[in-house]
Image: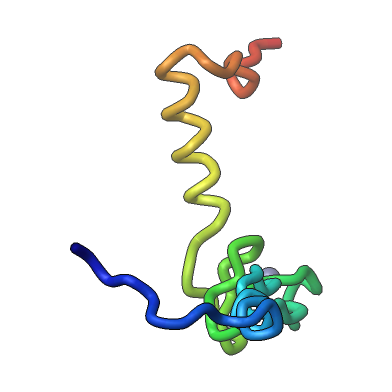
Length: 83
Ligand SMILES: [Zn+2]
């Protein structure tokens, strides 16, 4: 047989244990570069800056993503407009 409780725990004890079971909201800070909330101690996903330095080239990434989506035929090509 498996573990069998020797004595029952009170409702208070059970409820105290369960009071710690919840989700905590992430620690968000305001980006000094673009003023948008992002996770602390991480690169801002909106502008790609961390500690006043550009870590991720956001525009380059966005263009790459758009190109990939266009290749898959998910997004209509908007850039190739001829006058
Ligand atoms: Zn930012």
